[in-house]
Image (cartoon, helix red, strand yellow):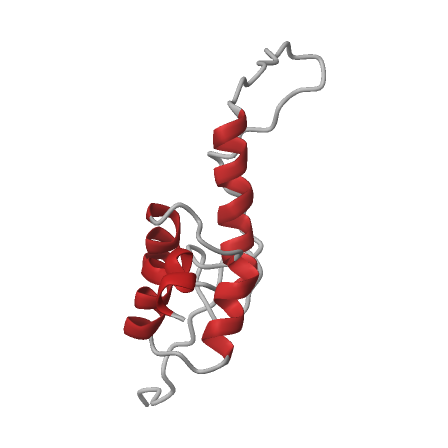
Length: 115
């Protein structure tokens, strides 16, 4: 009697692929997924948000668009938004290091005193 030297090949029980198993199969249906029935009732809620919060959200989106780091944005905000975020991005692109940029944000409102 000869013994087989071929290793056993495992297959996914869902799609029969040898690249993954049943748990990692991309075709696997997740049973926990909740699909809302079209006839099911749902509640609509109105969200009241202040203009100040809307402005903050707008500035955060602008920060993301200009790829400005969060700590730089925070210094900009705590210094009462001394310039536009577009100007902050310009200063970054000019090559200012972070510490110089932070100084810029702290003193730019008083520029006429110093220059």
